[in-house]
Amino acid sequence: MSEFLKTDVWLSKILERDVYKLIVDESSIDGDRFVECEGFAALKSARAFAYAKTAVDFMSGIRSLTRMGFTLVDTNVLFSKPIGQPDCAPGKYEIQPAIAAHEDQVAAVAFSSFEFSRFHLDPLIPNELANRVKAEWTRSYFRGQRGDQMTVATLDGVVAGFVMLIDCDDGTRTIDLIAVDRRHRGRGVARGMISHVEAHSEGFTRIRVGTQLANIPSIRLYARLGFVMDEAHYVFHHHQAEGCRP
Image 1 (cartoon, rainbow, N blue to C red):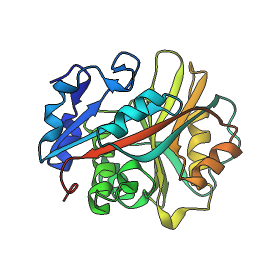
Image 2: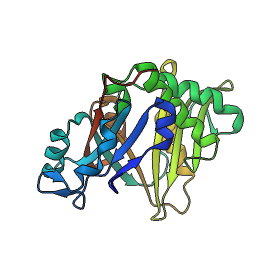
Image 3: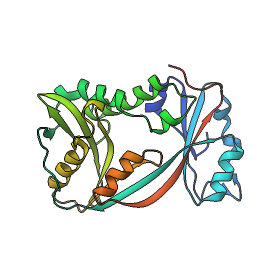
């Protein structure tokens, strides 16, 4: 195995196939080729699925990926803003830290609320499987495997949305995952949850969030909240066989 090809154990379990992350940067690329192509034999397996991310202006990396059979599935854009005072009240929704009793409801919201993730945009990954990835992503928080904090918005005790956070040592809070149940959209739930996070971020100076270029509603929301785009990356997938199956 190459030092630039890493096994994604968590995603391998969910997709039920061998999943790899390919590192694409100046150290892994020589000209328009990967420096250790001979170490990528695992990608030839019939069960192999791999993904990679590269800056949109790293042309040698982009050419190297396409030469290897990787397909562009997503353009990821990253936004950030200084943490300020909350700009809206939660209304009739109660916003609070997630507890263990919320796990199944949060997972259900995650399962049914995404359509623009790289898994959903990949035509070779069934939607049911893409939904499962998001649901298990939230369950990893309740199992202590990912994330530092989760906030939920509830109405009459039922979870309507959630935001999952990762805290960084540089004083930045990253929104790792955010979703609102389709039945509660257009009511300021996402805006209320983000405002709540900002109001309870003592010791942090900046908040960051990423989304897909195809996700116009999210981009508009972040713009209204004062977020500014900092970075953009292309995301590529590689399917050796016919794609992922549930």
